[in-house]
Image 1 (cartoon, rainbow, N blue to C red):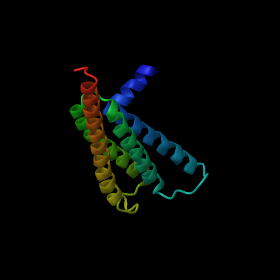
Image 2 (image 1 turned 30 degrees about the vertical axis):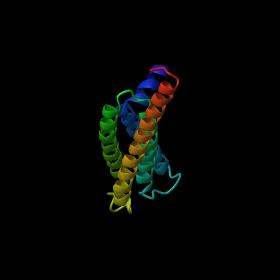
Image 3 (image 1 turned 135 degrees about the horizontal axis):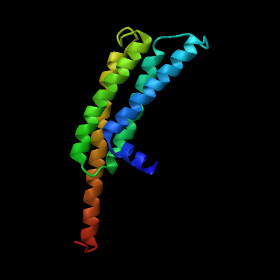
Image 4 (image 1 turned 135 degrees about the vertical axis):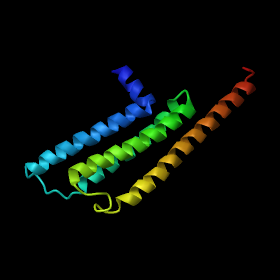
Length: 146
């Protein structure tokens, strides 16, 4: 179990797969509940779940980037995995709802907004890490470790 968590926390494409899997499982559960007449199908509920999972991916991926050893590779893989997650979660939402993101409301703007916010998150986290690394080097120099 510990090794699985290490892989999920350090590999953006594993995080992507997990996000897509969760989106699909939630969509299936919602579809079953709708078929059992538990509640009405508002159509956009699939899009809302897809965006919720995408937001969770954005936050966790940005936080996990602090743990990565190779920042440039992680940054590149994170961006590609984000695009893949957004695309596949959108396809899942479209498949289950039958609504494009234009028909479901203002989801086109949410995709654009989420993309910029994600890039800002990654940039802030990477800048924080650079500042931490610099501060640790300076602290080591002051203590005479280098």
